[in-house]
Amino acid sequence: MTGLALLLTAPAAHAADTPLRDLAAAEGKVIGTAVTGSKLTGTYGDVAGAQFGSLTPGNAMKWGTVEPAQGSFNWAEADQIVAFAQAHHQQVRGHTLVWHSQNPSWLTNGSWTSAQLSGLLQNHISTEVTRYKGKVAAWDVVNEPFNEDGTHRSTLWYDGLGSGYIASALTWAHAADPDAKLYINDYNVEGVNAKSTALYNLVKSLKAQGVPIDGVGLQAHLILGQIPATLQQNVQRFADLGVDVAITELDVRMALPSDSTKLAQQAADYKSVVAACVAVTRCVNVTVWGFTDSDSWVPSTFPGYGAATPYDENYAPKPAYYGIAEALGGGTTTPPPTGACAATYSVTSQWNTGFTGQVRISCSGASLSSWKASWTYGAGQRITQAWNATCTQSGAAVSCVNASYNGSVPDGGSVTFGFNASWSGGNPVPTVTLG
Ligand code: XIL
Image 1 (cartoon, helix red, strand yellow):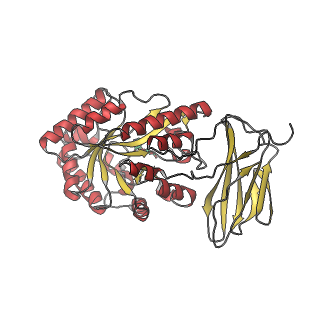
Image 2: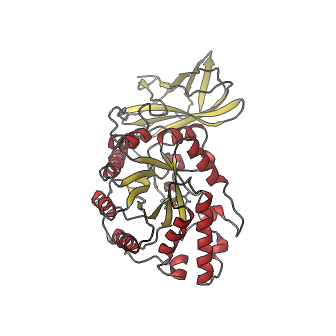
Image 3: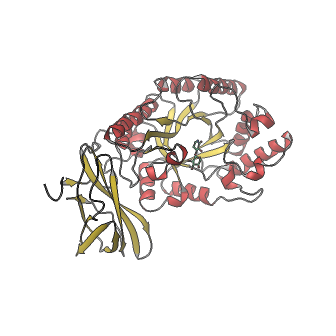
């Protein structure tokens, strides 16, 4: 066969079905995502605002970000995320007040008496929680306090203040915003194990002492096919202590490259985690740690791994997206394309008169030897330049064919081309047809 190997219709860049946040709300849950403030425009902002009911700043509220030099504050990104959340009727989950990582060097390099350290911590917590009083629904007050064996992690805080730093931090946060839900958050505590049992015992004892603790965060940085079998049981045992539970940083990483088998397993994994939360009344929130593979910490932290989020780098919903939707009771969602190649269009940056766009052609269970992507511009947009494809425009009709070197798209692979274009008045996203 010469020419195109397959003739296929591409799904739109956004899932056309009920947004995840609405599905979650119908179950009495909130679905959230970690975000990077500077990216909250264009397609990234559209998806973040439309699909999620809560936002967690990925880095913007960490001590190292907000107070890089002692007494000199930088709230810009945190403020921006909070404003975006308010404009989109989203909760904010504050992350994080007390941690051993991403602290400013003036703090970690200083030599402090325990009284000084305690004063610094109290001041930090009071300042940050007060700034966002009434705007942050829940705080990860203490992050990652335990070792894998359930002993306290040796940190600036534990070493300087003893285990009482946790109760103190919760108490100070409560004083600053009595309405915020206060959490302890950790990783590798999703299943029943030594570490989660230490967390369980801590929460139980804090409750018994009347310390303000409202919730437990299970980060859930998970590996493909390795969802702990005791996840739901573990969520339930925390709930039975009388605290809320949140899945705070969900991602499911796989060895790269991804393929259709791995993506199907990932959909099942996401579905089972969300289903465990849906099954327990006091599990209130599931937050993904970045909703797109282009904004995930995984590739840089776990070399060789990636594709860990529910959307691909080009904002096309992956099978994992539909896994989440199904666990949230979404009955009318479009099934993920099986044995298909699809093209997704996104606007990567936009200014007064122009924009840069990108189309990704991805195959799963199918492949292409050459391709042509076509769309119709509805608002007078005009392509001015293209790369990695040859594009022609006649009236509103655009068609782009592969360059000599990128016609082949393997099963599980993708190619991307880009373009600049002009616009005025509006710049709606067109539906791209492959064929
Ligand atoms: C990660 C961020 O996603 C990265 O951008 C940053 O470089 C390192 O921290 N557990 C946490 C999160 O509680 O704050 C971490 O976030 C991921 C692991």
